[in-house]
Length: 418
Image 1 (tube, rainbow, N blue to C red):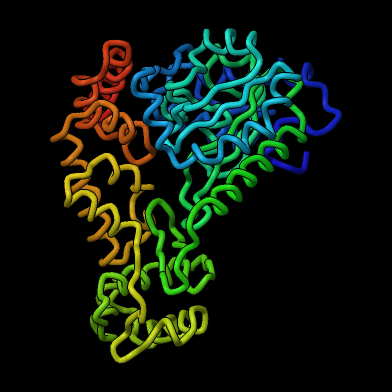
Image 2: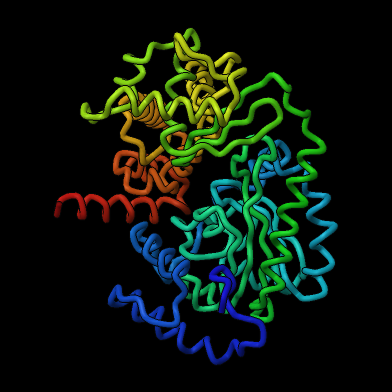
């Protein structure tokens, strides 16, 4: 099999693989050992699911009740793309007795449509609108794993981490904001093992691209003078400037973050201190990086003496900070795609990253809103945040409280052993 994201190669017999996968799943959940024929993407997802303390016999909780679901999804950025998604997927789902599903960036199912019998069957495992199917809540599954790895992915039968889900096969692809690249959610096709075919993954990927194209047509085009910097939740920032989208190297990402924080400009010595924790790095190294960056961006955007950007920068981390300062916690959390350049050790990035994270956590704990706390707790950066899990256990709805309390107790015990 040449494509690691496809569960079965064309012509493969699902029955031959199913027994081996069930045995591998039992081995992993009982002994923590990965065996063939588990794909790398699935094995890594199983490990994340285990670290998140997902019970293989559990079920995702419904977090958005009907009175909350309607207004939330009507205002969601993916709502304008739903006519295109339905046009492409509805007949396929109905004819094949499948389901189409669309989730938000936190893995909550906003739309679940398709064959009536399939909906009834899926409802028994809480694959329903309003339920959270992120990896940290539901283990390995196509929409949750597609969001976790930001790639289209197919999950077949016993590759699912939850045993009640192993009668299903699904394929999902993330959908991005066409201007910023931010993940908005995912589209998914779920059904029987006939979906374990490369075509289903290609199909759902094409639907996701069509959704992005529709959003690009409907959204106002960005100003030609606008400079947008997306650096949250990624190690390599994305810059949109003068109609171009540029993926930056890690060092160039750090430089752009530093320059965005100094619109008035910054001298070479100060910039050197902001970027390098290792004092042995010479100023010549920084000048060389800035020269490469100027060639990439163009001299009309990056100037020297002092180093500065010639256009205002709309940075995603500044958006979060502005919303927080105005008390708009839910929009701030929605814009927070993860820690700022998570792998960076540049002093300026570390300082900004920790400040933003601390401010968000403090606001979440102070507000005590169970939905917002759940969004943080089920994220990769919040899955071991014990104070947030304690707050969620205290404030969650009765149906969600036992799982939150169990996770908090498990974290308490683990931290006590460290």
